[in-house]
Length: 168
Image (cartoon, rainbow, N blue to C red; front, side, top):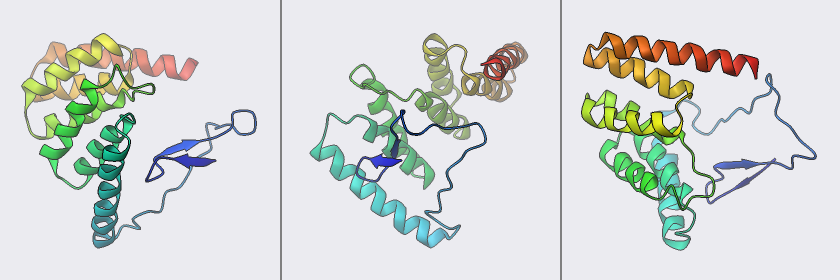
């Protein structure tokens, strides 16, 4: 396995020589549970990503990683700004990561901004209607809105997505 990108966010491997298995995993020991070390490493990572964004604007995935990095340290407004920028460039991205929808919906749910959460959920349902994370977001939004029919629809979507994953 080798990694690409300034902060090695993309694990790459030669499919002819390596494969991932259900029981295989990679441990990441970057922060060791130390809040001060996490803060220091996050600042370094964000700085490198922002530099890469200036140096290589075609690498749109950097916007996704900036969303994740800022959300991880609680800088929600910056995270959402990068998330919206990433979504705006999705047609330019050769490797668009649709998990941005669940990430951004989760942030909006935490903020109790149900309008933006619903806006993103509706868009996600058009693009990835059978995604298990989107089904989870639908359940969570239904709870936030106290909308029983949305919760039930989310549960039904979750069960279908889960069964599809198990079978495939």
